[in-house]
Amino acid sequence: MTTVKLRKWDSAEHLKTDEDMALYLEACIEEAGDDAAFIAKALGTIARAKGMAQLARDTGLGRESLYKALSGEGNPSFATILKVIQALGLRLHVEAGAAHTH
Image 1 (cartoon, rainbow, N blue to C red):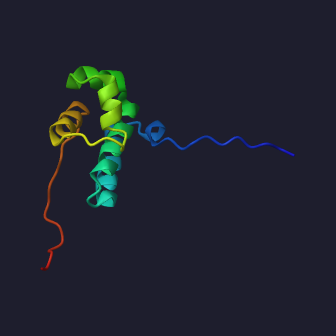
Image 2 (cartoon, one colour):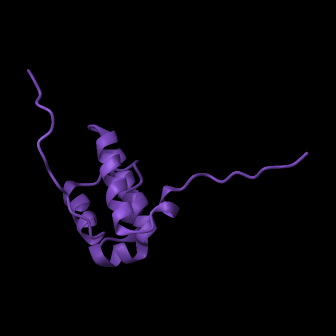
């Protein structure tokens, strides 16, 4: 009998370019709805792909703080999210969505 070893899927291993990272974040934002922790975790995945140590230097935040904030378990401030997005070389883009009726 052959034993097959499986590894846990890590999206960070597949984010090679800035465009990959931007498309990944865009897809996660679409998927997240109002789940801010999901978006923070997506940023954490991108941060691991780019290098958490460099991100810590670029944001002035400690690595442990970043890991916690971007784990999907923490509740980072919007200021932290903006700082991380900027340090990752990403930009937020806003466009009008489907009209909501009340």
